[in-house]
Length: 300
Image (tube, rainbow, N blue to C red):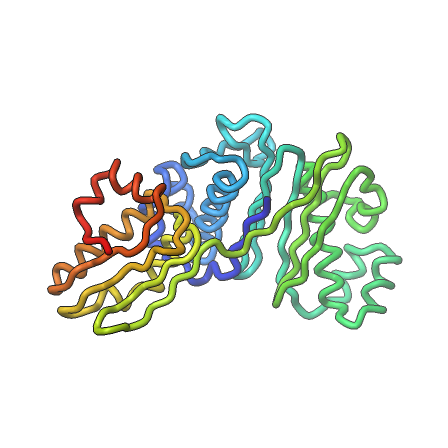
């Protein structure tokens, strides 16, 4: 499975840090640039999403480093992972066989870079393409994803590496502004049909019959909770007004989602309003019961 965040620039680092395990939080804080912190947080939360959706793993993943610096999942033997980011895009791939993922923002071509990184046949493909910058990004991500799958890093045979990519399957996707490629090992006849997940959650805000209504659709995991909190900023600012959380199409809620609901409840109550929850499914209702949230909110 491949999970993608196309808008890492929207991520609020201060809001997201408390949702991370202590060791991951410490790792993020060592990064100096805000862009690097956002990308690191997003990649980690995408990993948590992929592990939950594909492998049923609900705990926070623990990453350790191999001797070559590549990440490994502690306690999850047999699960391979690959992380990538470029510009405002981050991606994570997980599989039960070797896998590599790479994203590259499309940029104007630099001829010297093309000559030093592409074979003669690849250069001809780029020159013949109606969108040469996209073709370059496609070929580049193929090479990067291959190196990541093999865990070798960039090597001197960069121009010719794809000519020796036996037992590999590449899947490239062209998106607005960037290209994503997944490379998978087919040595053992693996089922290589990677599902790409871009969004698992949408949040819309409207005022209906005097109440502010936030409609939550999809799965409110940790990354989605960070994004939903920003989308729900108007609900945190209401004065003497009730907020209705329409959860009729909410499929799943993580602890970060519960924390978001509780934070909203405190903010709205302090301003003279109430938070009413509508339409939770049986699984979420059971989570509310177990955690004691059933006694905190009004339901309809």
